Image (cartoon, rainbow, N blue to C red; front, side, top):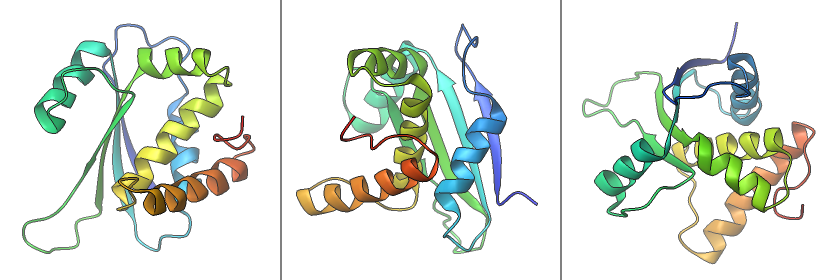
Length: 152
């Protein structure tokens, strides 16, 4: 049985060349293997207008971004297995991979791992938090067989 239930939503105009649902599922499972609870996650792949709208609505920033993480928190303290939602902008991820001269699949994996760690409560608001989060990202990415995303 899979440890992660994935709802993959392809809301971008061009879906050709995206990682498959099975690949997204694998990345999530490797990321969450050390956490002992069942998780349901939505990954929504969008275009620039949607990510820019969400970034403005939820973060107050009127510009597109590569990924947004929305952690699920129950008002009733019950054990619903929802971890949260990741909204990823296809064009930004592909553009950044090219600009940073990174393998596109490695960069997609990095975005998913980065967002998933945010859903688990990790952050990078200060240097110490960033160091912890980047170390975890690197360990997970290397388990997937990709190079260190911060020394590429």
